[in-house]
Amino acid sequence: MVKKSVLLILLVLLVDQAIKIYVKTHFIMGEEYKITPWFIIDFTENNGIAFGMFSGQQSKIFLSVFRIIAVFGIGWYLKYLITSKAHIGLVMSVALIFAGALGNIIDSAFYGMIFSDDCFNVGTMFPPGGGYAGFLHGKVVDMFYFPIVKGHFPSWFPIWGTEDFIFFRPVFNFSDSAITVGVLLIVFFQKKFYPQKPEENKAVNKESGETTQNI
Image (cartoon, rainbow, N blue to C red; front, side, top):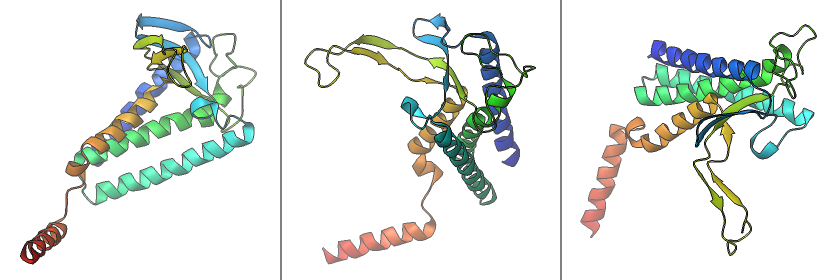
């Protein structure tokens, strides 16, 4: 189980970083490449979290440190699951979440140091003049955009009436996908991943029997 989880983590990190490095060194910020009308490679970078929150320099450090602490916590939980011989599906799901979180931390921690500023030009890896930011000040690279449905909200719709509607609007990366898949697997298969212990089943059966007798 250890080998499988480590292999999955390394595979996710390899694919994630390969895609990000390719996009950084071949696309200009905001450049799009349409694979299909609803699947677009759209190079953008995230300085904080969703909707641009925590984008200041001090907040950026706080967010990066929080991510690192979170990854240590997920890693500890993953180790606990492996040593306690938890369900293989649960171990793999947490490994996906761990790998995804670590992939984005790599961007945040090191990309500012190893890439040039690519606001108006294609980024350069290990530029002679140094990177665009210091340690923990890098931006997370996003590129996957799926505008599956486009339209307009009707005029009677509250707040967003007549505004453009796009589903799915967020731009994300491979690490985000790994985290999402890991979380969804745990949600959908939680009964299988967290089966009741025999003692718990006995307690439930005992309570059910006492209720029946009282009736």
